[in-house]
Image (tube, rainbow, N blue to C red; front, side, top):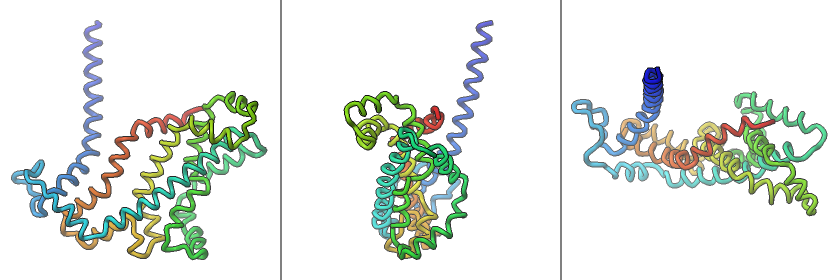
Length: 282
């Protein structure tokens, strides 16, 4: 009987891991095809007889040609500027807002927090035109300000919610002990809460980095000058100019995607932890 249960268990596990392997292949194969094609001649990419699993001679010159064809260094600096500014604003203001909603008692706190959560239900297209008109009237279109400054006004409802959930799990006795020692609200926030919330801050930083690095719609709306283009817009322009040179296009795509892959591999543990944070006590 036990032997039958063991056999049944291993069969189920085999099918389960086989299913997971199949799903992972669906995600990995496009990435493999992109990287493989970036090292090949354009005429050999779709060669099926024989099918080239990996090129014997890797053409690193494709990356050099792609960098020469478009000013990806300038696009990368623009993207880094926007991402770094958004990171600073999001981490600072979302943590401050989360502290106010989780550790400070004030009238109407829960109502205001509920109103902030309702903004997550609004599609971005609803607020797109009003936001654009505001930035245009402020004469900030075709600058980085529309892509950076909003992060300094709360850092986003989801980030506030995520940080608040983590802050609620920190014992309140620490706040009481700090108040006895004469610490004020800001000192408690800066010296006690933030050092204990490093994992939550890392999660928010990872989400913010990935969202801003891959952002296409925002730069497309607000940036008109080629000198201000981000990597996403630069890749779109490159595709229009070199749509027949797939090896160069794949090399350019690999350049854009690589930082995201590295960040994900380093921080995947924290990303998973971020999902679990949302289930903590309210």
